[in-house]
Length: 236
Image 1 (cartoon, helix red, strand yellow):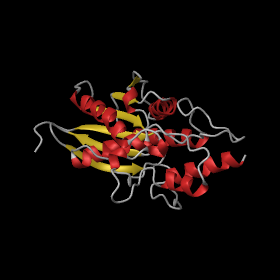
Image 2 (cartoon, one colour):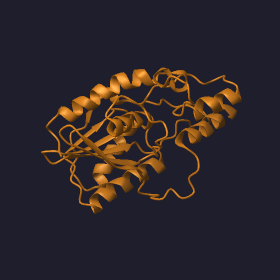
Image 3 (cartoon, helix red, strand yellow):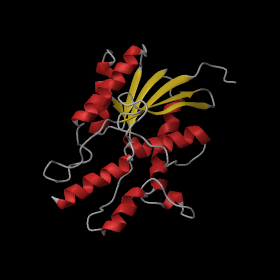
Image 4 (cartoon, helix red, strand yellow):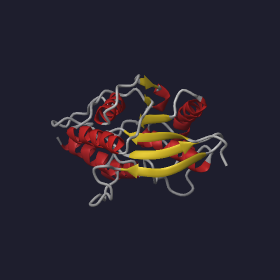
């Protein structure tokens, strides 16, 4: 048993964004703001925190615009004073390559297999859409996570990150080891609940979506939706 009360982390994925303009042009992924849906998701999460009387005492994001905006909207909707906007660039999303020009079949395989590699594949050497490898992601994300847990300046933390990063952190919480679980869906604006003690971690909830608790009608993954956006942009 843990000898001290566990601390709470609310690990969120940022709200929804549009990575392509209405004209089909790719937008700067680092600076893209939340869409109307993303703003509604962040506000809904904050309203849940308010209804549950959750008092956050610290907030940390990856520093990317969509994560920072999500955090600020969550705090505002929760009725809390703005907290210092700390960020850690090591927690940025896994970097993707250039999928332009790939044949349709190869493109679909790249997106569908972005977080779901088959048997016999070296997971850590798998590259996300031809970009950063899982090993490179873990090399920067896990030290940042370990350092965060060593800090003593928070008891209830709002951590707003990204789908790929969250999968790595959830794998660490579940197994206590270096790993990656691609089958964990992370919907835009979702909330994961983690308690950490002195030497242990408890995963209490995964992928909570305040605007759609049971995810009724959802059949596409976030990567499949991104592929649809990408194909639409290529046809424009």
